[in-house]
Amino acid sequence: MSVVPARPQDGTSLTDDEIGEEWRRRAGRDGLARVMRASQPGHLNAEVTAATRALVGALLDRAAAELGRPLRRGLEVGCGVGRLTPHIAARTEHLTAIDMTAEMLDAARRNCAGQDTVDFRRQRIEEFQARPGEFDAAVCVWVLMHVLDPARLAAACQALGTAARYVVLVEYEHARVPVSRWSRLRPMEEYVALIPGGRLRCREELDYGGDLSAAALIRTGAR
Ligand SMILES: C[S@@+](CC[C@H](N)C(=O)[O-])C[C@H]1O[C@@H](n2cnc3c(N)ncnc32)[C@H](O)[C@@H]1O
Image (cartoon, rainbow, N blue to C red):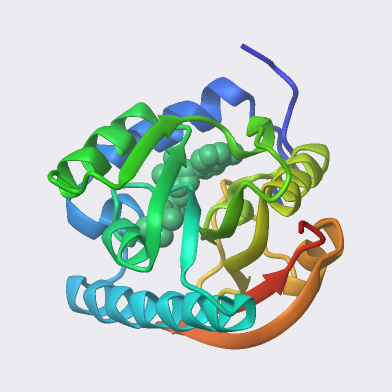
């Protein structure tokens, strides 16, 4: 296990072991609090989940319209407990869903029981390898904000931009309640610049109780 320190916003260092333990701890929470802010009320988490599903769906529809055909292979990065997975699977012929946390993947498999077009894989995004353009679209919601180390973030964006023609990316840009040491706020433009050939095609905003995320459709350099 690597001990390369990540650098969260409060200036302290976190090791891979500490980060892995934090995600296992979160996977032990109840319901949507496993992948959303535990401090927020359940009704807000349900409302924002519905809004996120609609936003991601609309951005995937736009990617399909630009390609001029239905989406074939999709990739979901950091699928968590499968909050969005069935909705992404409904818009792709086949979906590969990855997450680095075994306990999250177990919950996602249960949540998607019976969906035979979805494959789950335990994998870190920064180590993900695929053929160039193997996927029509990759979806990544509130995951890259948790990749704290700049070199790993660059590797993650490189992997996304190589594997998929389009990336649907939703990440915090502004937090009303300061984020914890496990997260980092960055402007969407920073991610786009790290994706090889990345071009912003469309950008929306997602309001989660005053925490503002950018929701973007990005065309990558993959053909
Ligand atoms: C905030 S949750 C979001 C889950 C899901 N995308 C959603 O919106 O419901 C972040 C997820 O990303 C996973 N994760 C964090 N860093 C990762 C990395 N470097 N590679 C793959 N998965 C990661 C965590 O295990 C967790 O399940």
